[in-house]
Image (cartoon, rainbow, N blue to C red; front, side, top):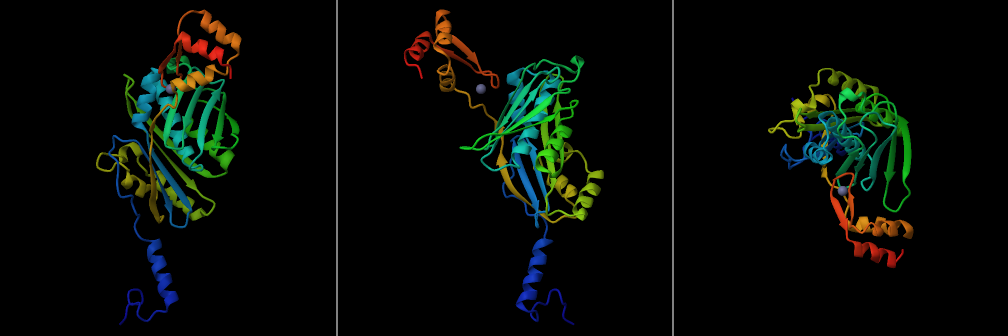
Length: 322
Ligand SMILES: [Zn+2]
């Protein structure tokens, strides 16, 4: 007897199309061809076949290590900065491809105000006012305001703000997503720093129930999360994308790993930018700087590069006011 599923000879073109479509829908997850080594920072995203659920996974270990070493962070501050950097990168990846995202704080706790920039190319940088703060100093973030700025080239910046509570960065960013995007999101960050300040890993993931998502999809995720191991245990040298872990999280959903982006530490500061900034100062301020009789030294808050502006360049700026 003919098998109605595999024997397609007797089927109409429409029926055949429907069968092929169903086979595609339930096929195992497609994965991206080249997987970077576990030592390389990356962000990959996946999507269910009907667009119901989105998943993003970031590894920013090296970027966070670089940023926190430059800032001279205590282990506690390095963990905070790492969570902010990995989280900002996940949030930025949900925006338009050319969009830039900045998270800043006002009236933060013992670590002082922070700024984290995430650029379209996967570049990121961070600074914090008091990088030596420890947990003995009280809450690092505390109760302040988180300020979020989204910028696209050639367009005006879109700003929003929400209150910060405690040091729970996962919760803070999830609340931001809920309030600003009205998308049900689960975001978890996992940053591990040794007592010597070495960043062992800086990871995070974001799962979102898109408008196409159903109660059943949500139920699936909630069930899977109950037994889901930490991302850091699933991300190994043999499985740098943590696909085994991701399949466990997305179990019951039909999905594909869809795209990848390199991420890394990068500060766009330069000697030219210092001069441009100086050229916006009033003549009297420039005169005061030149009267000091010393070259001007300016250190970047993010990467700690020091730029020296010689006296003759300061004088040239005064001679050619902008
Ligand atoms: Zn810099």
